[in-house]
Each structure stands twice: as structure tokens, then as C-alpha cells.
Image (cartoon, rainbow, N blue to C red):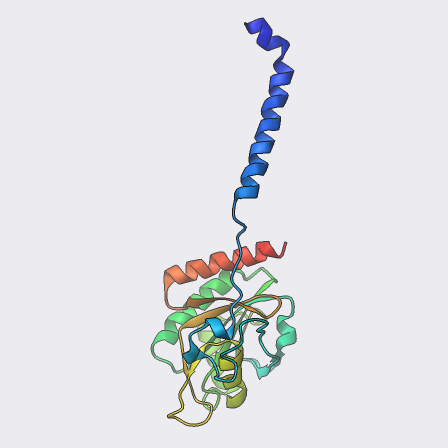
Length: 223
């Protein structure tokens, strides 16, 4: 018996290696491919979407923008070209959800601080109050890393349009005047094509863990 096994040991060894490869390939073919949804205005809570685009089901992209960051620099879509980034909307004097959102964004920033592929972008929904000096003070207090995380302000109309026509992230405070907004706790994950790949509760640790994993997944999908 042992002599028989010894005689054919190379055959059995080759058979075992071949079988292992086939099983692995078969399992890989059956395993579902991980992917992230591409969100459109049609798939989002209509309260967060401008009425002019609520019918759009596909081909939705973040519009071009030109805003001013915490250092007084002009930030445009070109600063985020070929980047994965996380966006949100806030205001510096917000006493409630913005606090948790800011520290959760900071923690994400610190995870990817040495990763040039990932960036962050926070928009003030009260640009009339949030001057460059004010957002600079805010950025310093929250541990913002220049070049990695831009905290931006701009005209109220542009912020409003970005929030409701691009990021699909805020409610219209129509009782308060033109272009006034009620921001949400949402973080939006944006891909390199400027498409929305996910919405996450920026105050919820479990949602932040999911966002972290989705960023890593998106990075893998680009490889």
C-alpha cells in the first residue's frame, strides 16, 4: 500500500494542487462581486432634492463649484479630481449634531491622512455668518488637516444649489427666506466620477464604520 502511494506520490500531489486551484476559481466565480450603489435624485428622499431634478434616475453628478476654504483659498472641483471624498453640510455655531459630525469626520480624516486618494469637504449652510476667519477658527478646533479636508463657504445660492441639486443632502427651509437650508446629519461618499455612492449618518458610530469600509471597498474597485 505504502509503496503504491510512494510510486504515485507526484500524481497525487499534482492532483491535490490542481483540485485546490479549481475549487478556488469555482468559489471566486460564485462569490458575489462587491459593489456600491450609484445614487440618483429619484432614489433619495424627495425632501432633500430640488423639485427640478426629482425625476432624474441616472447620470447624476456633482456640479462644478468654486468656494473659499478655511485659508481663504479658492477650492473647485479640480482640487478633487480623481479623488474619493466624503462631503457634508454644517454650520460652525451648530450646538447639536454638527459636533458629533465634525469629530467623526476628523476620525475618518486621520485614518486616511497619508492616503492621497481620499479627501474631505465640509460646506457651511450659513455662509452669511461663517466668514473665512470663522471657519478657520472652527477648522483649527476640529483638527482639520489643510490639503486633506476643506471647510468651505461661499454664496448662499451656490451652497443651496450644491446641497439640493448635487449632494441631495439638505431640506429647503422655505419659511426662512430664499436659499435657506436645514442641513442633515448625512455624510455623502463621492467617487472619482463625482457620483454619490452612499449616504451615512454622521452621528452614528456604526454608520461611520460602514462608511470606512465603503471607502476601502471603493478604493479596491478602482484597482
